[in-house]
Length: 398
Image 1 (cartoon, helix red, strand yellow):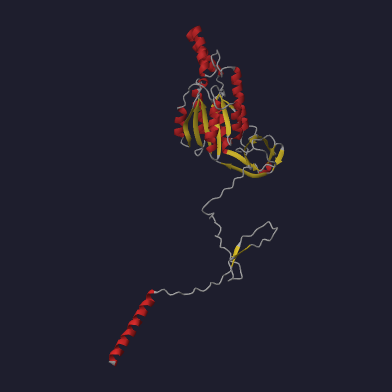
Image 2 (cartoon, rainbow, N blue to C red; image 1 turned 90 degrees about the vertical axis):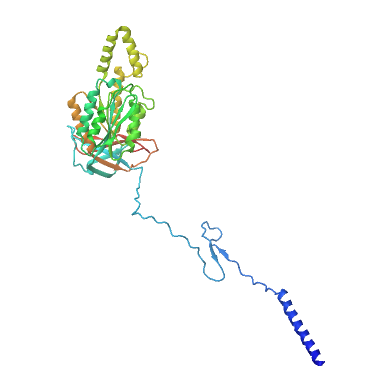
């Protein structure tokens, strides 16, 4: 009996232990979380005191270090100059192409910087740059193919080809013709066969937009060319149909352009008016009147007996225009009255373009944009002729 009771007691104790263990596995245990110890937050330090105007960049400080922790900054960006060519441009620097001739029109070589003096608005300037070298150049041949030049067109073509033949192999030529319209017959090239062909394709048309043609050549062609450049202009100087440009505006363009302009002037008044009279006689009285009216309309003169560009006054104005155009640009005007004069003119132009002195200086006094500055260059030797630009416009190409 005692054994039975002991066995029952043992089983009871074992069952209680198992139930207690199972209860411990499913019941959450509450653990007291300790109170955290507060840490000092980082301080922002700035060494600038009150009343200071210069503030330093803030740095972070914490309690683990006695020195401020600086924020790393990226290294500055560097450019490898060996891979990228840097060009400095100073718009205040004035450069002048200068030609020096003797009384026979021949180029004078071997001059030195000390032989030149430059004046701007009467004030002596210090020459900072000087060079004397022979370089190839680019020239634009502008051929007037208007009605007034139709009796001279063969002469003009021959003269233009003769000029091309005067040049050296590495000199480039561009060919343009103009009447009422503007035509590019050849882009700058050294190919003489191509240039001769382009010149022969110049055919006369209606009207004479001389001012528009000069403006377009300077703006669209000359400004895009590098190195030495010039314009040789074959014309009688009379404009009848320009719509965009005028006498004065093209003068300003010539003054600002970095190119010499050499007009070759043809006096076409006698042949043109004589040809019109012959046409009128063949038509009779009524035909003559109608012919004059039609010719006046074609040349932009309106319905009159004499259209614009046919009066002595218009031809005189044309001659004056070409003379001023050459003077302002630093070039020269030549009269195409004889073949001998033309050949001499072409030799002179080619020599002047090929062999020039180049002078540069920083103006002693500035000026507002658009101000005209007068220039004078002289040589400290007697009996020599100096040719260069007479002025420039501040803020424009020099």
